[in-house]
Image (cartoon, rainbow over all chains, first blue to last red; front, side, top):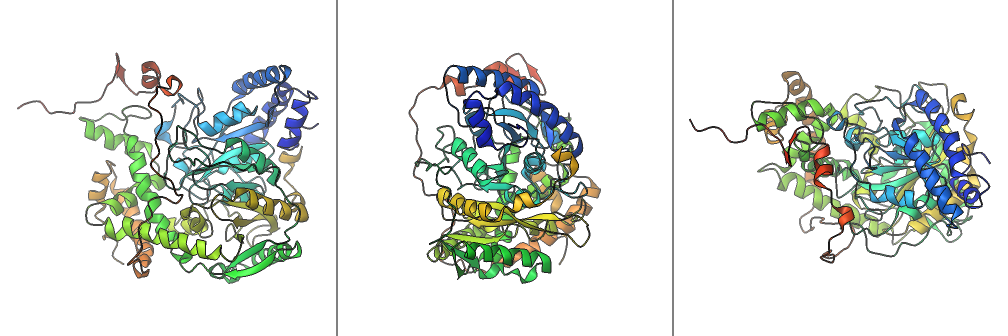
Length: 493
Length: 100
């Protein structure tokens, strides 16, 4: 029994069997997380008292005869999700000091299943970013190279699990914010179908795209976490009223009969030679496991980025209008209420959030709506239709999760260059599809000496989470890529 | 590509965002560059394509008209995060100008 390195499944099994108490797990993880956090800056805030109190409740429930799916499993929560009584900043100065008055449904479901909340994780401000660098607070580092970014926006949720400072975590994904950091940090990151997981208590960025999902060190733990949080929630009208198929008992070990689509428009030519070789080898592994590789085409995928960078900022400009200094968060006084709004928002938001609010406000402003927002929503329809056609020929689409491994801090100062990081993840987000990133090897970047992980993205039709995780599991068990990469000392001792 | 394509001061006013001159100097070319990227959409044929309203099929979502007390914030909880509260109210600066 090793609460730091064990899987969620093993911890839950042992706690349910009373081989170890949740309290012992909490007392092991609390100092561990603090020590790793000092190196990685993964957490906005650790919650040791909440963790201890929850551990006592879990031990009592086990003593009373309950069996809990995540009994005693240490979980980290992205700091854009509410957990009652904890600070919830969304990585923004405008919410510094805000205390959540209620708990998000996805978080509550983890607690009800016996999980122990270890802390709130750092993120790009309001989940806008691909590196973690847009947080107004900590600089979260990549556990595999402290000179490099962990990816974003769910930076701390990826780094905490990769650094063994949490067993699993929750992130949110709007255009790649779970999958890209998972790829950069050598962990599994899973974005379910839009609406599978309630967004109640998730601070909204782009409501038609936002989706909560798990990070884990194995597909099995990601599946276990997903099974716990998925399902209709009366508090989120957009959550899907449709039976959730359990995924954790559907994990397969071969890919016979599975058709894996390779997208013509996602050709690997543009990648650096070593990265390209890694993905070619991943595709070959899928075939070796019995999958049939088929060529598919997504002719509109190249418009994904342009479509996304109209829709997401438009929705962001509307959602973030609520931060006005009246009901919560920062207030900077002014002569009248209008000046108070303008000064509050000027002082509270960081540059990336301001940029997106400006883009979105412009795209929705009088005279431009048809040319931008409406056009983008039509393009989005075509992207969805392309996926539907592709899925007539295949069961799952494989591609890189990102075009490179984790880059150095400050390497991408131009916003559009940063936006290009999401090239592979955005089309699936626009179509609402379930999609994940799974470790698929590593490369030594040209400007580095350490091997850095890469992620294989697998995407499947709406509502096919069970099949998707099954395919990912077969690939993971056959390749064991995540285990081949040595962690820095801080994360193994 | 002209960087003054967006009247950034006007957009900032619409967004209730005070910007410094330095921010305007930084953001203007960045937004211009992004809008140039976005212009590529114009070449995509969407003549007979409906706009996406939702990605996952769902009909009108309704619920029973019953109170769920556990989902209702108390007045105290609702005011607890307020920058300024007075009694049962949020306090804000003057909204209506005094008569001249």
